[in-house]
Length: 102
Image (cartoon, rainbow, N blue to C red):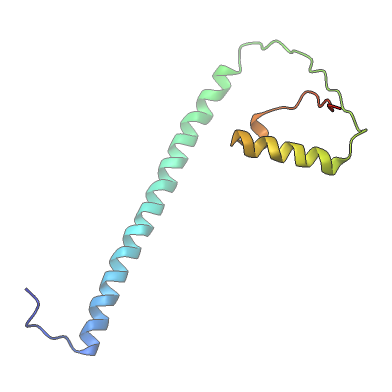
């Protein structure tokens, strides 16, 4: 189709520049669309949250036991190993106790 057409160096740069312009304009339009949609969805969710929090919630006191007798580096290594093994984020689980086996 274009086998017999030869482009000069200036025309080739023009075609390349046109292609890059089209691609980046499409990316910019997608970015703008995502920003607009996120603001709309955030506004809708923001309006719904106060209605849900109107019901009285029962406050359950959390009992937190902190054992500072272990080395913090050892605790961090254990938490990291659990996170890697479970393939989950550190915030998604809670370590209740650590018992050393002898």
